[in-house]
Length: 397
Image 1 (cartoon, rainbow, N blue to C red):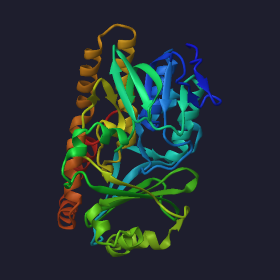
Image 2 (cartoon, rainbow, N blue to C red):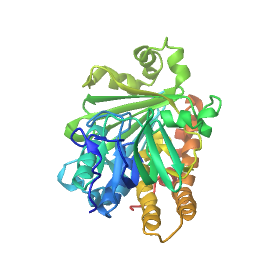
Image 3 (tube, rainbow, N blue to C red):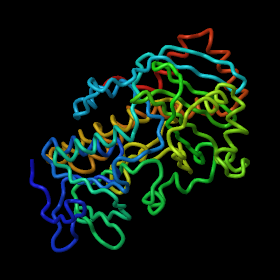
Image 4 (cartoon, rainbow, N blue to C red):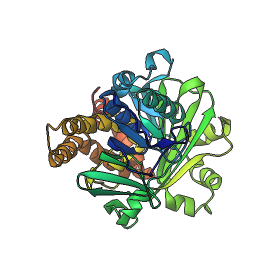
């Protein structure tokens, strides 16, 4: 393992901009699943790696907290002891529509439940143990590329330089806005103006069942995570919040409660936090996977609709796809342009069809009438349902 930068102060929390900065091999902006997984792979391979996260671990994040089993072996290889954690294995899906009709189906591969609060924190610790310079409570404001080296800035200060930069900063960040990425400039439409809300709750619910309860212009998922807690997370349009006087509680009573399954959940559950975690301006529009030589991973590269239950696995898998190309470049086996082209091509081959299918399904489930018709059509055709589910998931990687 290469030595850590000598230009570090404050107990390793802030790299110094004084004097000549060391050049890292890999710098990562964003410490979610994709960023942390990439940092661990990079450090284990012997590359000098730094990661910037604007929050401080552990922290809650809006997420459905269901992980497809395609990621199980990869996470264990990174160092997460999943087999020892007694996590709920989820192998059944329940879908309901606002009038109460329902469809239940076995999941072809299945998944497991774990909170981002726990999983991200564990990955952060594994990253540190493998030599990643993990800088918390630090927001990167800009990245400049010159003479084959990137400079990462916070305010007017250059925090580090690096040969590779990966953007793993989530659904929508200050950098997306500053760089005027295409999805930021698009007019508001049915794919780019959503609000997401997440609670952790306690209630009686089967540990092996994940449910998607639809309501007008949205849907709500519930599934078990660690310690017999449940993640209750929903996505809806900003319009629904606006017509509810911008009150989340009012929106839940007026709109979500129209689905009797949701009314029962919200009435019977014990809510474990004083307020939910929320995020706005969520976009499912197409995004680029490379921007000015920066490799985008996770939601920064493209976000699958949450009803597909595969966003966490996609972020993890994308980190592996990115690292395969980064490794070749840093070993001088391919030029930068080929690393970028091959990463984008491999990303599209793996995820392009999944995102397209997810956007199609989301349009159907945004309408009470269409979702009701879909349930009626799919119920007597379990094989078609299985194909739809499989189309939004991959194989173990």
